[in-house]
Amino acid sequence: MHDREKTIEEIIDFIKHHKNSLASINICSRMLGDKFIKVDDEVIHELQVKLPRADNEELETFYYMIK
Image (cartoon, rainbow, N blue to C red; front, side, top):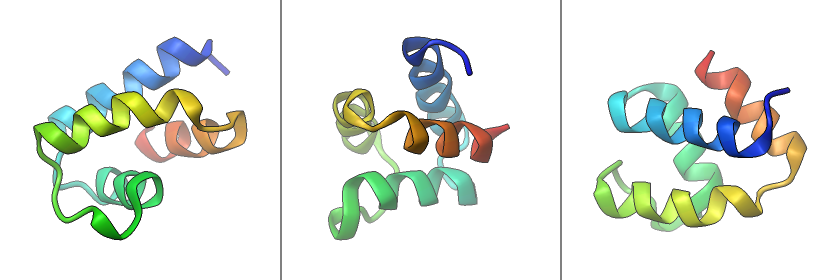
């Protein structure tokens, strides 16, 4: 796997450019839970804070989803 920072950056970048994709919606709902409604700038900011706290397995899963 890529290093964590690069992986997180790629996941965030994908979500920024594909806000309505199934992968983006899945990642957001798994990371943010019930309060997630739609991908917007606030959600992306929350992901930037929370993704670094995710375990390696979860990051790998998200990375696989976007590739």
